Length: 400
Image (cartoon, rainbow, N blue to C red):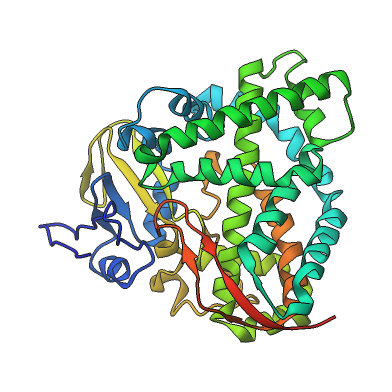
């Protein structure tokens, strides 16, 4: 993996399988210029430029072009991807967020916190006495999937369905999308059927829960269409699972390198929320946030042509020494906002859910799993797009 100099900025080969978005290569490029050239367009590497371009009026949400960048322009996956509220603009985007927002109310999600705490404790009980675990399959995956089951009112023993199909859909966020497309679309079809059954049940048997609020948004006045509701539920299942699973694994990886901060979190569980923010600053699962130029404009002397894709590198921005100094990992520090949940009008709709479930899980893990160490055999998704551990074996000293 190399940088080839151009007249203006370095070049990053982000489709190279060996490319790592958090590598020294990227950090050196950040010192050369605020942006780099890539196969997809421009990479924005520094915090201040990322903050401004995140909300620039001549840029729109750009991830809608991701399937096309990978040669996927038609079919079920392309249609579903295009339906995402994340990929809509203007009034259509505003309408979808307005109709879906009530289901994400802090009060509704906050009422689930005791369930999240009990779930984390139950999962830890299953392996604590062994003094080791495979963190991804024994904690991150079942925790993330069962949180989704709790939110949607699904039987928690069906969590493996959520996990399996969502993990397969997650392959679409990597550079192997085109070759993985057949199994991605099979998973999408199965989740569609799952969503259809869930919708039918809430229409016949409404409850005082998240899912019923969403279904109600489809039945009253200015409403979600049946297709919008179905597409949104599949996105919620996938996004809620994939992000939490990956981010929990990345949190564990980060704390393995900072044992003093893990011990501090065990002693001060009230730092759980700040721990989530600090992990997402230095080690976010969403490695880039995408924008697309809707018209040609000039920014800091650079002409950005209409249609240009910009990838705002979240870890590179979040560790920019111009803003964060030497970027020491510190869960007590006051920081500028990170962009692990995006930003502007496209800020992640489910951010409060992710923040809530992770801020409950991490202090419980820190209290129960003392002095964690990495064991041999770790395996990771590619370090681009969205990433996280596939296998993350650890040892620890169990505490009651």
